[in-house]
Image 1 (tube, one colour):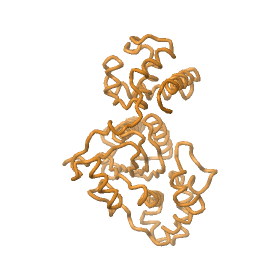
Image 2: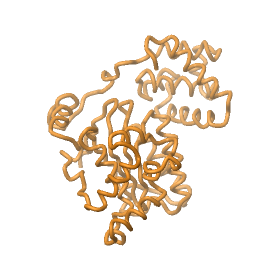
Image 3: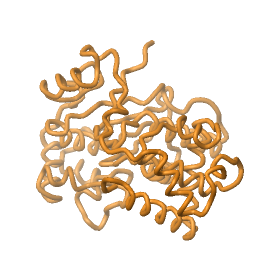
Image 4: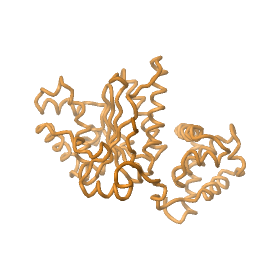
Length: 331
């Protein structure tokens, strides 16, 4: 079976979902859900992905994300592998956790972003046992469901730092109106917006679909070009390396020495990924020929170190500030 097309470009919005293998649960308890969200927060920071909304159900999850880089595949691969590995270890199991690859729909912001956010948030009351309830009782359940971004959309007291609420709230006119929007969806039992998706990859109006086909595929939704050239503002890798060696007080050759200077190598690899539009394979070649998993581990280890070691965090911020100072544009 052919893999579904992945249309990726900077600034794209996606609805992403994964279901358990054989519809089995991917969360056994709240500890699993908490770990999932911790790993999700870590991954969105590493890959510069913006999380607009989410919901966790027993055997699947939904995410509404925007990719600043054209890197949805990298982000989801790393995140799904990480959680699967942890879940299997935690519950003494092996094998696939998910039913195939994730499913992703490219979203037309103007026409469907608001609708998709509502559809996502109402997953908690879509079960048969709740579907027969009147919409007011469904609402009471939905707003109390804690494994969802909905609470932060209706109350400032329940916002999460790793979720960006502003864009969707501005589209509808604030939290009070978003709540009314959700209630209206419950009252009228809204249809599934994804039934209108084209080729099971794009959810949008005719003009949006035509533009995507014209600019990002061969016109038939069979192939897609490279999106590296869509990155308008790119810092040259050499400048990143120069800033790092000067700021951190190391030699260029030190960055190619394995098992030493892991913090410096992590800082360089993260800045190269974020600001030079290099793939992790390309970064690995600059760091002495390590593979992309090695680069990913360097960046993950760096983020964890920065969370508790102020010296590492200060070194990163100092290097990034130097890069910003020497770049021709504001990062």
